[in-house]
Amino acid sequence: MPELMIPAWVDGTLTPVEKLEVHRRGLRHRAISVFVLDGDAVLLQRRAEGKYHTPGLWTNTCCTHPHWGEDPEACAHRRLDDELGIGGLDLVHRDRVEYRAPVGGGLVEHEVVELFTAEATREIALAPDPDEVSETRWCPLPALRDEIAAAPQRFTPWMRIYLDRHAGAIFGDLV
Image (cartoon, rainbow, N blue to C red; front, side, top):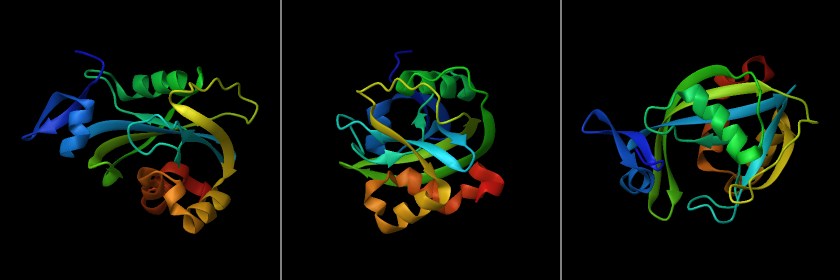
């Protein structure tokens, strides 16, 4: 299958569908999200301005859609490397959640997301892909909650949803 084909449900059957078509139609589809942590601080990225949706917004460490037939954990490792140049972290599967959110331009994310965390230190070497990531920073969870409350438009819809509805599953005792 071509790289841009992702697993989506069409008429109740998991089917490979082109990524942009999935978002145009708002189809329910598979995804992964990763949160790299150093204590109570999470590594955030600001999405590159060239992204086809939600450009320039702050979000979790990384996220994507598995390729057709790709294991979610393998996908999470791939995307950490692709977006940020991070390898070798031990991922912990935290939960599977589902959300639906408009992301602009008539596009909709309707994702069934495998959530992962990993521990690292703020000294971890990063090599962000400028086509994916314009900026990174570490942010303590209490400060992140305050920032989202004060300026939600600076964050991706899914980041707001994760902090609002799924923080306990993702961050456990840290929240």
